[in-house]
Length: 389
Image (tube, helix red, strand yellow):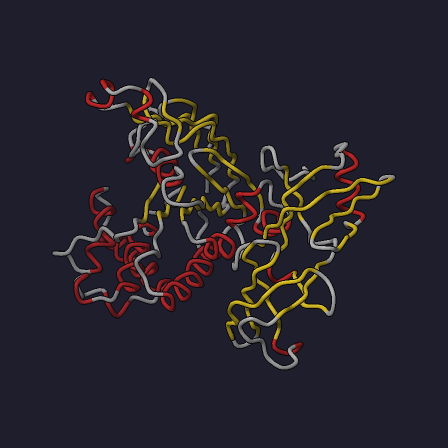
């Protein structure tokens, strides 16, 4: 029910008194890739994003990349060091959290242990002095949506982790907020429950008219939930796009390695440009890139050079000839076998569908593999960016 706009948002955590006294060289010894300035540690920098009404945006990245800090700035729980935050066109930098018309679901549920499920969900509405009948109507509607009606008289300690998370979500949606913020809400659940709750959030999104901003370090959640994904690293946005866009067209080596499971295979290769056509050469094979990729490289004026070649495991094919590798491990996954091999001095994963499998693979076996020019990604050796973009 709201648009959200973040314009050049920045967050700097000032140095403590002790840190200020230390030499700059000493400060840089911290095990962090975040930028350290005279002001302090830059947790989020140059964050720009426009979120459409009712859009589901997922912020994803490794721990410490600044995604939760960004979410907390939208919520008003962290002060914005620089830049501007707008909700529905209104500047929110100095607006108190309670006046932003947002609701937040936390990783640790944050339920009141002495209150029943009903009272937890009704608490914010009671603070607004809403009529009792209206409170009951809203709580019952939310409980029905989340399938927790039978637990309304229980206290949180009598609920499972998944049920507690449903209550936390219910407490947020009864307020009908303009923006729903969710900070790793499924990370405390086991794998089966995470899958179930992921499906519930997708259903919930279709039933309530709210803009979602969701933070996770789990790329599966990002890919299945988000209309668009914002991939972050060390306080900077690496790429913004639909799940399919970031999977098929990673902007740089980091995105390519972060999105996709198992992770993309990388090789040292040569990109060769000949009369407007482009080839990648490695391990005794030479593969022409697709016409679409060639057109983008040509438009960028890309010349022959050494590159990092990326090919996803599911796009890598066992063949009679090709790049030679040695099998280290063969993992039977049911519908496919994941071959872990050593080739070209790298660890490589190949996914072989069991329907195509003839015989079995054993440790030490020699295998050849190849790939199609449509699925090859070429990255600059200098700055890791995708040479197509």
